[in-house]
Amino acid sequence: MRAVIQNSIGGPEVLFVAEQPDPSPGPGEVLVRVKAAGINPVDGAVRGGFYPLLGEPPFILGWDISGTVTALGDGVTAFKVGDDVFGMPRFPKQAGAYAELAAAPAGEIAAKPAAIDHAHAAALPLAGLTAWQGLVRHGHLQAGQRVLIHAGAGGVGHLAVQIAKARGAHVIATASPDKLDFVRSLGADDVVDYTKGNFTGQVRNVDLVLDAVGGDHVDESLKVVRDGGVLISLLGVHDASRTRAKERNIRVERMSVTPDRDGLVELARLVDAGKLSPHVAKTFPLDQAGAAHAFLATRPIGKIVLTV
Image (cartoon, rainbow, N blue to C red; front, side):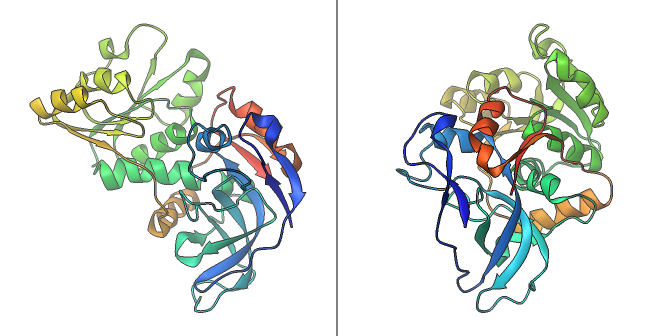
């Protein structure tokens, strides 16, 4: 099979296509003919050595896949050859999504949403599961609550806005000036231009914050959370922030996304119901993975996808 590999840590230029042995599905796994592979910021961090999840190269990046089942490992009954599937297998271990074929545990993929193509389905798993798990599993979001979502036009953020709206929340989202209209189009009730002063002067009495910035930004976000509220961070949380939160009975949790078939099924249900639509900023062919990573650094709206 053809796959994007890297033999050294570095910039987008270290990514290149090479022939690699075809994977085989083990017990409980399926072999997927990858039609599209989503790109996420964690991919760039691993490529550049800032987040060494996969150890030393060589390795194949990527976790988001959408494609067609071509073979079944022993014991697999949930899928059949020819099924269209999507998922985020093996995270944070190597999944090898940037390739023509990928073996995936059957319990970590689900039927592709019928309402969207493979490119859009590949944009959904990691970012969508992060949003879903952050808001629902960890945040326990309830209808009628006020939720603040930072970076509302980003990969996670634009999906989180839609998920929160689908669950009946009042959604407040931050974005840069050129992305405000896009975030409004997702259904956000209030959109805050974070370049016009601190958002703490424009937001108050929030039940739940989903924060993708981390660090000092967590401390600022705590100022707008009601006593007894919740803050879910996708990045680090300072000890001082945890102390301040505890004084006000605010639950602060740092989460990392995990493979989640039930979550994928729920995301697919929302897509097919017309309540969730992943936005693909641009697609690139497999042999332009380096260019795709360079484009990722421009912080586009929504997601970037490799077509295979």
